[in-house]
Image 1 (tube, one colour):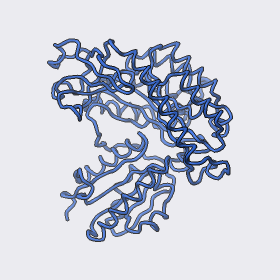
Image 2 (cartoon, helix red, strand yellow):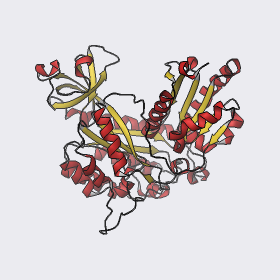
Image 3 (spheres, one colour):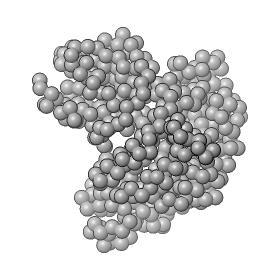
Image 4 (tube, one colour):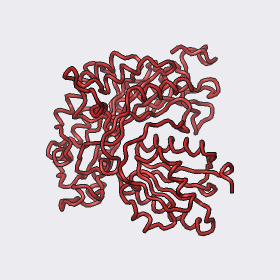
Length: 457
């Protein structure tokens, strides 16, 4: 079959970095002449971009692979690829478990997909998991949205949290140059994207590895400097960034977010546990007091800022009292959103080998109790939006109700309201909130003349 009529499907697990990598790989495949297939069973090339943070994501990959491996026995031309963190961690073992695989590639190799596929089409089975210097990215990603886009600014992570495989699979920190980031954002602005999320596994570390960082005794290249540097790009209305690490979060960054009108008042800062002993065992490098002081400082500058975070329950050795310290932190801070997970041991991490693992029952009980509190607090936080007028950037039609469109407030709350997507997509609309739920809002357009498409930003 000639490549021009070939179709591909990508299934993405895990974090925003993986989503950004998948978009980039889709861009490469489309430049190679592949077309998107909605159904993986109709695709000639199936790529699983995998995540190893949680056990169930890994198990899912193996069950999906089993189905496609069977299909390959009937259609030998099918190309099967596993990319991402499971690929990096398992490497050749994946080929032993699933010999039908054509290509196993770690996340650092996303930009090399075309070269690697060439080797596959030449008849080789390829494993690409060796660390490489990340090649500057010039492909055009096939983005999932026409309104919002991700831009990677730093790859890898130098932290050594005792539960996390990311440093092993994504390599050491490598920052892109401010010039390269700005050029990519300018191009996205020209293409009509309105909102950019700057991404990094540990985004506050941005720039530490770039040359010329200490001329004045202070880094010349920090995330804060970068925000000032890219802020005036034409066409881009909103800038967000994730994921932050409490150890490196500075007052200077908070000030910049307050000063720069395009930077949204939304911070994603994982705390993982509300107990100092557990944080120490996790090797997080901060205390819950330090975490609380960061949130207090943000609220001092921006009282209305939305705060989201990540938390892990059932870490090895966590006592009931230590878990209750996490509940207490969640109760007292009041997060707008919280991603929660029960600890699952990852191969190659120190915590996986400890003999004080907790039972699945305890972990699942704690996760349920935390989730219940999270939903209660998020609903309380949502109440403040009721009756308010919020600026909503319209992204898509409400899949459950075609008479409504949906978008996000600057605080990242998903908001639904009546309107036509053809008229409103990519526009920022003033919406009066008529209903506030724990994780989303409903409203109505305030100024009817905006619906005609003449939107004021």
